[in-house]
Image (cartoon, rainbow, N blue to C red; front, side, top):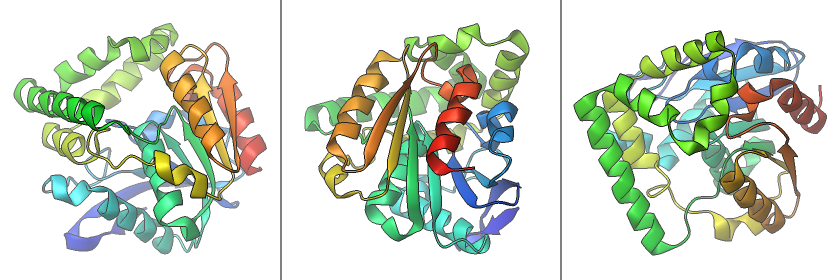
Length: 269
């Protein structure tokens, strides 16, 4: 399905299944395909709306960073729900997609029934740390524009945060990297400048007001986000934190069976 957005752009949605709806939001540089077939097949009894955010996958590219600032991204996702005839449903977000889903629960609560936040955080609360991260994201945006997407994809796979993906089967790793290399440099740079952790508003002080039942899902091998997940869940009135053994940052690929069991038990089948 393709959904018309403000400004003549279109956003692509991989729609499958016919049950109660779920909205899925991928991470930075990902797409609907990045969830992996095993994870998506595990949700087959639900109506899955797996979005390609603007500038990712088969969606149109944003003309500039202003087009992918938080409020406009949330507007786009509400347009997707409207086009699908969905008033509210559970939102499942991975990494950057998790930050967006959390923001939706805080700012557009009428559209969010439940939350699954995989390897996500509420952002950076400390002003100095935010400024440092903003500078890092700007530097990365410049490198992507200068050196290209393939160089970025290789660089990111070497980060300790993603070490768990090294254990994936060779064919799966190759397919994942192929998806990464299909990104477009201007779009990635726009997202870093508009929605990087140093730029996106921190939501730590809004967590106590989020009423949607929430599953915070992290991999045991990802110590940083497991710590963040525990803090986040403790600050939310209706959240539980589940840690998946043997998985790192990308739980839905590294332990898809455990991911499906956790998600379906929480949102229902």
